[in-house]
Image (cartoon, rainbow, N blue to C red; front, side, top):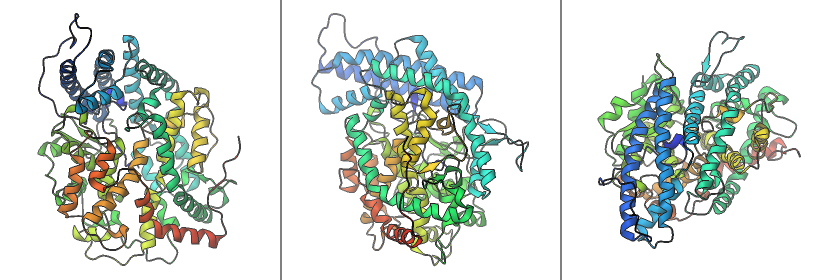
Length: 624
């Protein structure tokens, strides 16, 4: 399942202004323009006034859009899609006006805080001068997300014949089924939802690029990559540097898992180049592999020592109980409880009477205290972790609510995704005993614990990277519409070492079967989050005085670690992300060293297993 959430995005889920952002600044009477017709050169006072008006206006519009998007996501109809599209269009119109206005202040020397606000504003703007194109863009955005939300596969044969499966049910099949033919059929069925999106998505890309170019960016991918306090080129190099740090660990894991799957399913589990069949990895996208851990568990091992899903069921923990466990972890670190409205207004369970977007997400409707969680919670270990992840967004949102509107976001989007997963790394056997889910810490094998973690944390890394590698190339034109699907699988082969279970052609549009593509949510944030969460986790463990292996650390109920975390969260986006990182970790550079330290014992073990099996680490990507 997806652990990563859309930090609810304004402007049709572009990486523009999170409607999960920002406290309203002091009210300023809006005007058509900050500058009079007689002025030719703006002053700092003009810039301050313009920014105050802008923050107030955008805050108000984002709150209205948040409400419209909430209704659209929790009650999918043509009407709610139309309402959300209308509010999207209004915001895009305002952003287009601002894109023209903000140019007046180019070259003006500004105080540091104001200068940063202008920089962030320019990066977040979206401009389409043509009103008809603005309307078309908003409609496409709502339609694409709606098509994904309504997506189903209705098998005509087999045990699911006559039943239409939505994504939550399909995830359950992939988690439990060990029938390769069944998995192949359902994989192909789910991926068929993408094909009707293809033409709309092509036009959606064209309009995004036009808007980005009107603002002076090469394309929308370049605009996305400019949001990291560095140039787009520097950011591309940074992601590649981080990937090269962790690639040897992933290749060792991939090789071991492939060997075990071939033992289970025979030679057709992988192709002749050593690439694994994507439908055999435990979820519809092959992005996290934890569900197939029983197939690859170390032989003769004591194992993890517990089954969290079974523990939750034995303790009769319901959906609300799952959320309370997550909230209690943050409270144990010194954070205030969630507001009463959170419990009254969130969607915890899939309604029986309507279509909803079940993809988990955390919302801050009013940029203050109207925090909400939107999930279709299932009583299982994955959702227990996901709840902690989502609440990480909510507590981050509330921590920076005192900041000016322009600074109400994570230090970078990878930070926002990493916070909850940092907490979730503390879901150790020791923690489960502390909260009463187990009576005593079971005997377990550290190799088993680390392998189970790696099946999700490490396996995800190349998937988290390749989606935007594909999308950036689509934005800049390197990947043409006629090659969308071939390029998708070429990148999956390069980074993940996986192949589709059935033949694919350009009649298919497999990227559309992954929420973040039709939802238009940038994805590199999730790759960064996997790196950052271990960096954050190690820093908090050190603050808590952890002794022993890093992977056995839990900082539950440690107020000192919580205070250090909160100091970083409260900064929001007011400082460049290296300064925020230093506040918690003492380091100014994203680094996978903590992740490699955490998994070092496993890496050694994997290499020993692969050598004993006589298999070479990695796979071969055939020449085109």
